[in-house]
Length: 181
Image (cartoon, rainbow, N blue to C red; front, side):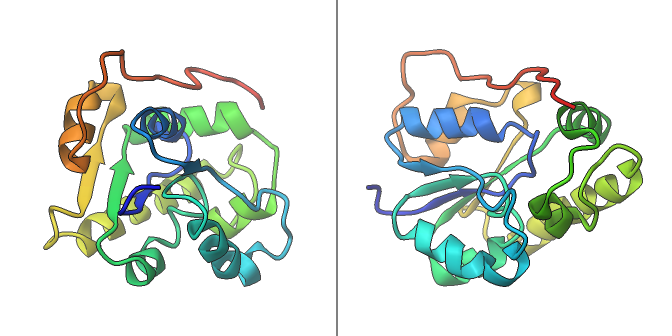
């Protein structure tokens, strides 16, 4: 495993699966989301997250993005990656992907379980999260990388941030336009 942990703290549908594939390519053991159907996710998220964090060295998607402050305290000197995309494109992707499918993890993250019909709530939470992350790390530029994969960010920024060599392959782009709702 790698010496420092890497937490991708962008919300779902911001390129988290692409980051997961990229981190795997760079040699990280990656843990994605968990707790999708766990009705007690709000009560046991920290215990479960810290248990997984001891077994992996890179993490993406929910609930990791929501508990970034606690992860920063528990794992000092970790690296954090905030994946962003334009709000209008993000909410369209979220609605296309999840639609009216609900779940405890989304309810815990956004306050309501499904995005379709609740776009305003989801957008407010997405924008608040991004502002909170940027504010939290404002005096620690070496600990936070902001990536905009839809605008062409990729290997160069990621590898420079993680002090890794750029692999001789194209940056991964996973889950492009997957509609599941």
